[in-house]
Image (cartoon, rainbow, N blue to C red; front, side, top):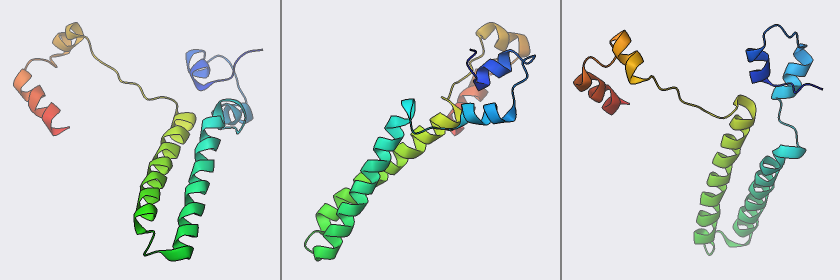
Length: 121
């Protein structure tokens, strides 16, 4: 059985894969490698319920705890976004151009200009 993945399709365009299988390969599933996402969602629910409980008891007395939990909740939500985007889009990668290719295309002609462009990024 062949592994269905987006890189596999890109490297072998002669293979015809149904849209259903393409969607299934790209979709995050709660089983297997998606356990970290479910764990983060459980943490998010836990933090939200703790904040709600502390707010219901006494918001003024527990303001510091609520603030700490809110910060942790924000971090967990950011982690969820990162993990979900990694599952959906794949891991990010960078492309570097060799010095020979830069010289061939005239990209490294003005080092001062490229340094200024790097500062703007």
